[in-house]
Image (cartoon, rainbow, N blue to C red; front, side, top):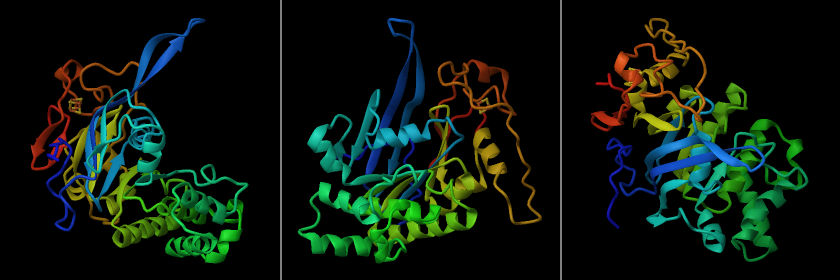
Length: 340
Ligand code: SF4
């Protein structure tokens, strides 16, 4: 299969990562109709994801960052087909999965899983941990008999740092961090290649966050997993990601290897996100950039550069001219007229 050239595919991947993409998202759009009146006429569209392209290589972690409402969770859900895309394509392991349905989609879903922000809401409270993990094994016929099933569940619990005896317990008997570990074990049960991690640590204490991130990194090394790691906090993404993609109002505004994003962000929005990350170095000159207002409504986004009403360095042309996502230095893309 010919390799697709993607504007958000960085050449700066670590040498040990394969060059063939595991996931390729091309010009993906997820637009929701806003209906009105007794006839439910569509009178507007929410452009939650608007023309997004990105790639993830095997064994790679791509961090997807932006404030709440920028479309990152919608994008994650559309990629694993929990939501129907309006346009564009999602290619996984060389196969276009955008229009797959029924049994074919279920079969492919084994290869891409999702873990959620809220481990409480995503685990059935009436099922034991063993049943929750076992269900995934049963759906995909991954174990031959009851003994193999029990062994596999025990091994998965061990892999995520839990006691195999915990299989008999219910989700409410665990702490938040332990419940997230159960969610990870359930995702791992079907031996995926890619896990979309939707804010997996944002509901946890800082010390527990570090444990879960370390666990995800260990599992990545052990199983060769790729992650699309969604977060609103650059501090979290910085530690786990090989590359970072920054979204604003449904669009990618910057993308590069993590080091480049952290050391030399090009887009004023990324600069503002980064300025909120606490710095340990007392000599650091980093100044906090406080953005005015919230992310505007995607129903009626601002003209020109969608960031212009909040941008501290906006110029007159920013109100009328839409900045293209362009390569401002090798493998570093930004959608800003002033980026260089
Ligand atoms: Fe700011 Fe203009 Fe760049 Fe948009 S294009 S980020 S408004 S300077």
